[in-house]
Image: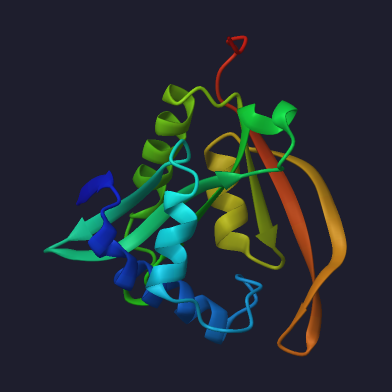
Length: 166
């Protein structure tokens, strides 16, 4: 296992992992595949928000990312987080250490709070977030329509640090 900050060259693998979930599930609400260039641009647009990857034998098998929660200035201390694992690497113990590293990196970057949105049903993700100390803060029913069905999204929050912004 090699957890590290993302590099420009990682985005082909990140796009492939993301596109698997777009094509096969409602875990990701996208309908169309994403390109490595689009993902790279989104990452570059927000340099304060970390992206980490887990690389095994030179292959990116998972990534965890932080992004903008909401645009207004007062929200700058809260980040939205997520994690995606390649289908053939799932249930291999990758998620927990990668997500811990992301949350630690977010705290070090000065974020006070992390928010995760989880499309339901998704018992493995709910269990991971509970294990990491996230608390359920609300569920939006019928938040998205994908795969010919409505899906709720549960939101979970973890407080990361108590410092006051300077």
